[in-house]
Length: 314
Ligand SMILES: NC(=O)c1ccc[n+]([C@@H]2O[C@H](COP(=O)([O-])OP(=O)(O)OC[C@H]3O[C@@H](n4cnc5c(N)ncnc54)[C@H](O)[C@@H]3O)[C@@H](O)[C@H]2O)c1
Ligand SMILES: N[C@H](C(=O)O)[C@H](O)COP(=O)(O)O
View 1: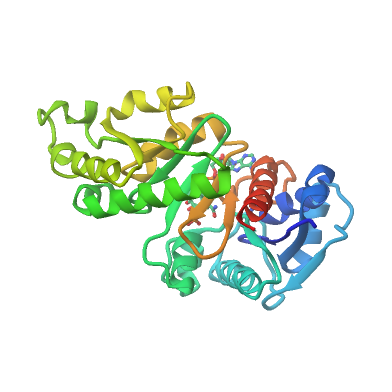
View 2: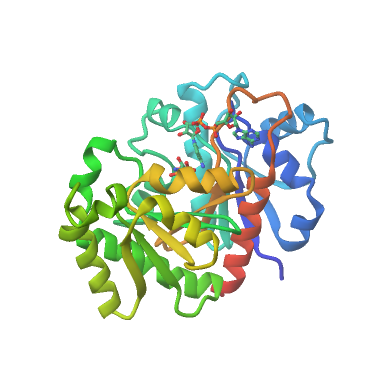
């Protein structure tokens, strides 16, 4: 049986309704998954019109009030709807009405303007599921990265790194690669923080104080982790097949190489939650909203990955 995937519309002022409309018209994906769109039929149909598509024939779970939304103009109202769509999709998965959720992009700023304390889907879902430390993975065919710290100011990153945090991130990643990707004994590369991984304390000591002890602990627990490795070359090595995933110390360390290779078809996966959640790897693209030009490939990849994970996790 095809897994049912709850697909949110994202911030209605962004490209979400358009990429979801294109997803609903993507026959190969409809063969893999049964879609339940979580949002408003009116918004989905407006997205379809922008793309020159007929109204999608798909189940829609209606959420929130009907409001006037202008493509490209986010507001507290668009942020509130976006947050409501995510919460409803989570409820559907928790109730067993969907096997997984796949989310279209939201704006963190609009979400907070609507009164949410969260810095995105990941923290919202972690808060709502009582998950202390979710792990953000971004995945493409050639490269997978996970982040030890996520949406944090650069100046705070060194102080937020800990042996425990690195070990947790790598262990959750290891277990997920085995469970959902069927990789036996996943090989993890652990990045340094500083140029050339500090070059033995020449510039920065986080490698010796924090990252190397974390790698030792992981290896003692049977995880095939190596590092700290110089961040400027580790991604090139990973794309040559040396590692299954690169454990990165901060957001842009991992997401710059990932998006350079995979902006069009990469998937954001939340690991360590009690549910399966995938997402696009791009943002709301307000500059394109309403034009029908947004590329749906990442949304399609997110739904396909959610379906595969749901099948693998059964
Ligand atoms: N999964 C998510 O919910 C998610 C992911 C990333 C960013 N965001 C949020 O999105 C908002 C806007 O972020 P941003 O401007 O930094 O990045 P963005 O990804 O929205 O846009 C960056 C550039 O890429 C283009 N682009 C994005 N998606 C595209 C698509 N599908 N097809 C063609 N071109 C596309 C945009 O037009 C823009 O030029 C922020 O609030 C950010 O936090 C959300
Ligand atoms: N860091 C993610 C990215 O750039 O793709 C992103 O901002 C989405 O975050 P959430 O999945 O927490 O909304």
